[in-house]
Amino acid sequence: MTLLRFDNVGKRYASGRDALADVSFEVAPGEMLFVTGHSGAGKSTLLRLIHCTERATRGTVVFADRNLGKLRGRRISLHRREVGVVFQDHRLLADRSVADNVALPLRLRGMHRAEVAKRVRSTLEKVGLGDREKSLPRQLSAGEQQRVGIARAIVAEPKLLLADEPTGNLDPALSTEIMALLESLALRGTSVLVASHDLALVRRMRKRVLVLDHGKLIDDIGPGDLAE
Ligand code: ADP
Ligand code: ADP
Image (cartoon, rainbow, N blue to C red; front, side, top):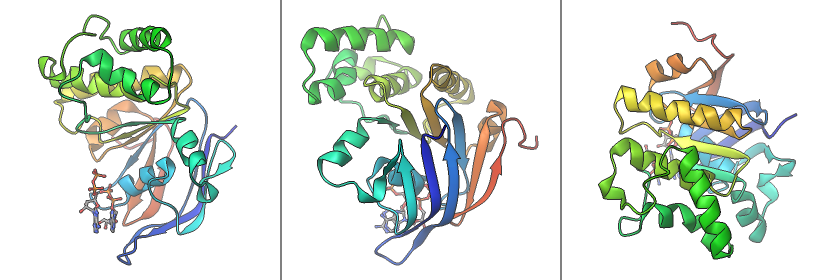
């Protein structure tokens, strides 16, 4: 079974910059993997193609049997409902409670209040923040704030979670905690793709690793096979 497939994908920005060239790989449902490489290697671009914020200029990206290069209008919004995104700086609304921040994606799609409240509660419990519903983001630690970002990304039960440097602002202990949380989501069936240039962290996780270098996929390393 395949959830996501890149087939000889290339991305050239309007500036003429080739951010990705001839990239091919597949991701299975429930698989957790990393994409690593130096700054400018193409990690963010790869995530943007999956989220449909950019389009491939060569090859095809297929998600859940949909060719993303052919999606238009409302179909792009529907696609994005199946892909959760976690940002390095979590992008929480500062003047809204934790519960309101997590509820946002469900409210935006018009879900009933009672159902929203129920889902928000169970999602906050999943990320270990069952007792912080009413807090404001600034009342939480950095690690807790990132957990809220993850809760918001998974509350609508996406098939795939994309995380772009999700531990970029966290110390090693907190980073490990966040990774354990992402791992637990994968065990429950959500595929998780993490972009990170933190090689020490990537090694510790012993997952599959895609290595990008100047836009080329130079390695696709099996779980636990990354040299120490
Ligand atoms: P990474 O996430 O690995 O740092 P990026 O995907 O952000 O890499 O960038 C890959 C290359 O594409 C870099 O050379 C970067 O400067 C360039 N790039 C990224 N976004 C754009 C854009 N919107 N327009 C033009 N070039 C871009
Ligand atoms: P992020 O994805 O981390 O939020 P950006 O999308 O702003 O960050 O940029 C990622 C990388 O792509 C950076 O290295 C940035 O310099 C480069 N980049 C972004 N937009 C452009 C652009 N229009 N032209 C060239 N490089 C760009």
